[in-house]
Image (cartoon, rainbow, N blue to C red; front, side):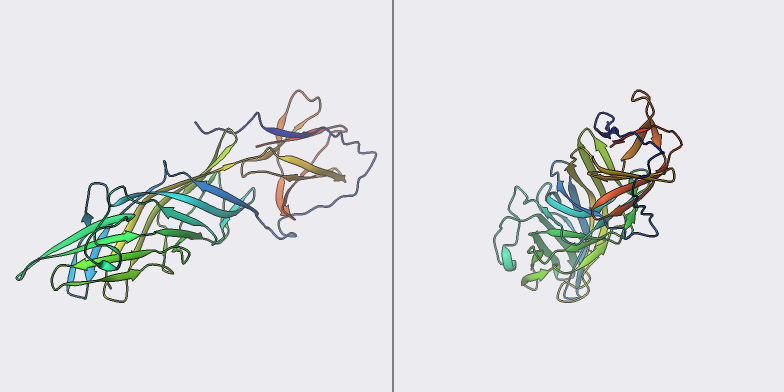
Length: 316
């Protein structure tokens, strides 16, 4: 069960005596450039699966639903890495990720280039259409699928964020090809997906913490439609989820500054769930409402205090 890590805290037991005013650097969201801390999530293949469905079209004469070529050939596990900028209140996908489909255990037809035979592929499907000339079948093998993730800054709210602005890009750093063969009239070839993109229409993604692990879960519901070439009109729907993890070091309070009953804590290693705890006796702790911003890769927590002596720590 996901839960906040109450046991992982960083404390700076520095009392504040208001008789002495320390130099202060206050940074509020409207005054500072909000720059996320770069992080890399590792995609978990055991929890990341995407199924392909849709319609295969060819030469403007053929269109039929895609069905599996072999059992399970339209579902693939995914691995790889997701790059993001993360603050306590936002996440942004930077366009440098590579989330790769894992090869199906059964070779799929056709071979690369649409030639006869079979070869390793991520997905394999076929589509059949009845005509007055007989059944026409198109076999399809999708190979070397690699996705990048791009987004604007996405606000986090209670550990979740909307995916409507999240874009999946078929990366140019992966092959991303569709090999196809048409039974009649006999035609074959390869079309590339690289450089094309699709928006995610899935439900909200989540960012949660279990122990010392931050878990990113992105529901996938996206459609790609080919608009040119011999396979124009082909529509592929990709549905599933991507789950990725990040091992979290404990937070570190780098500095504390105070002036006019306002305190600024500069903290590194925070997450979206991090918060300040305050105490006057080191026994009883309570959450401290803070204005949160980012400066030079560190998160600043700014809040008022009224006690003569007070202690603070960070809870993830």
